[in-house]
Structure formats: C-alpha cells, structure tokens
Length: 321
Ligand code: HEM
Ligand SMILES: *[C@@H]1O[C@H](CO)[C@@H](O)[C@H](O)[C@H]1NC(C)=O
Ligand SMILES: *[C@@H]1O[C@H](CO)[C@@H](O)[C@H](O)[C@H]1NC(C)=O
Image (cartoon, rainbow, N blue to C red):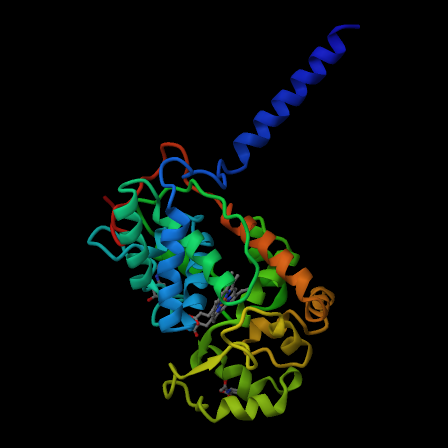
C-alpha cells in the first residue's frame, strides 16, 4: 500500500502549512542581515534611560503589554492623536499613566541611524521590554521579531482590552484567555508588578475598604500618602512591590501570599481561588517564575502581529508614514 505513506506525509505537510499560517511568522533572527547592530543599539539606549531613572524599565515593560493587548503587538500605543483618529494615549488605562514614549523615540532614532526604514516600532518595544527586565535583574529571552506597525490606533479598543485594577479573578482569566494567554500566563505576567509604581486612584478603594485580604500595616502606610477622598492625591505614587520596586525578582508573589498586593487585581491572584497554587509556587521558586515569565512574554509578543505586507515600518513611532 504505497498510497498510505504518501498521503500521511502529505497530511503532515498540510498540518505544517496550517500551523505555519496561524502562528505568527516572527523569528529571533529577523534583522540578522538587515540590522546587525540592532540589539546593542536598543540595549545601550535602554540602559542609559534606566541609569537615569530605574522606574523607566517598568514603564517600558508596561508599554509593551498595553501595545500587545490592544489589537496585537503593532506599535499602536505609540501613535499620537490625529484629526482622523483618537489614539490610545488618552484611553483610560494610559492617560496620566503610560510613560516612556520619549525613551522609545530615542531608541527609534538610534535604530534609524543604524538601519534606516528597517525596524518597526512594535519590534523596538518588544526588545526594549526584554532589555528592561534583564537590566533590572530578571530573566532574558530570545525575543521574536518581524512585527510591522499599525497605521491606526483605537481608543475604544484600549479602553475595552486592558483590564482595570478593579477586575476580579474570573474576568482577569477571561481577558487573558481572549488573547490566547492561560491563567498560568496571567499569574506569571502579573509578576511584572515586582517593579514600578501605581497611582493612588488605582489602589484607593483597596487600601480603605479591603480589610479582609490586605495586611493592615501596609494599608496604614499606603493611606498616609493616598487620601480617602477621590480627587485628592489621585496621582500620588506607591511601589507595586513594597520590598524591591526596582529589582525584577519574585517578591511580588511573596507579597501576595502575605496579603500585601497593592492593587485589587493583584490580590485576586491569591485570594482562595484557582491561581493560589501558582502564586505560592512562584513565591517559593524564583527560577520557575523566571522561566515561566520569559515563556509568557514570548507568547504575549505573538499576539496578532502584522507581518508580510501588512502595516508599515514607521519612521517616527508617533505617526504613520
Ligand atoms: C493582570 C492585569 C493587569 C492589571 C489590572 C494591571 C494594572 C496596572 C495598574 C493599575 C498599574 C498602575 C498604573 C498607574 O497607577 O498609573 C500598573 C502598573 C504596571 N503594570 Fe500592570 N496590570 C496588569 C498586568 C500587567 C502585565 C501583564 C504587565 C507586563 C507584562 C504589567 C506591567 C506593569 C508595570 C511594569 C507597571 C509599572 C509601570 C510604571 O511604573 O511606570 N502589568 N498595572
Ligand atoms: C475611553 O475612556 C476615556 C477615559 O475614561 C473616555 O474619556 C473616552 O471617551 C473613552 N473612549 C471611547 C472611545 O470609548
Ligand atoms: C469604601 O466603601 C464604602 C461603603 O461601600 C464607600 O462609601 C466608600 O466610598 C469606600 N471608600 C473608598 C475609598 O473607596
């Protein structure tokens, strides 16, 4: 029966074709010939920004998340408003909050000097996020590249796709599931809150009202710089990880186990539900957090990229060509 092996190898070929067309055509060596100094160019600019202000590493990491969750990792978060569309910068999760755009401009300028018109802003963001984590002491991964830049942005999509900090566990799980990320990815990626700061407006309700699952001494400390009345001190900052806000470590998970998550959404991950075990595991094992975080970042970076002839390679990350 010669036809059996022939048709089964055909089936396997077609299987690969199907898999190849549904998964992103991103690769770690995408700019190997077209921009050989890309990685060193990005890293030195990220390094100097973090040397000036350690928080910038957190801000760059968050920008990549806010890019990927809104119509895929396509650089849309970087676009300024125009007369024809309202961009994402003034959407609820970003307004008065997303930062690092000037650093992205500096990276992009350096990259344009090295290889004009070759590297997308979406990829610049992916590399900057990776470098930020590594510079602050976290894991390093081989970042996949080949994304192209969107020619539009959507404030509505940004409002609807990025979960607010009031979100409960089930809704967090379904937001992540909507972009192909598992609840394990949710827990690992939330470990990003081991670095960076949050504004009073985003944790006020928790520190005054969530006495059931918030350490009382942390509540008091945070209340001292976040008045209970809405509208006063809204932008006052506090570290998401009270212990080491500029080190990418597993203290975020140790905090959660001790009822010291700053955001409602943080503590949801350890509140008697299905993600408790993953939080506890990461709190005990920094190595498994590091490797799961790296894998989840690669998965997040695979969300709906523009490839091939879709989109464009923006010259200036703030506007379409
Ligand atoms: C699970 C759902 C998530 C929610 C509800 C959430 C919410 C928030 C909020 C409210 C802030 C503070 C913003 C402010 O007060 O201005 C914040 C900060 C931050 N988030 Fe998330 N986040 C989530 C997931 C993630 C993910 C997946 C990442 C990265 C992969 C991330 C990275 C960060 C970082 C690094 C900061 C600090 C930024 C800075 O200091 O500039 N977050 N997040
Ligand atoms: C998005 O949210 C912001 C801030 O809450 C609001 O001003 C804006 O109207 C919303 N935009 C859309 C298109 O829903
Ligand atoms: C705490 O909850 C009470 C009762 O629901 C509410 O009136 C109050 O505004 C809440 N405080 C904050 C700071 O959210």
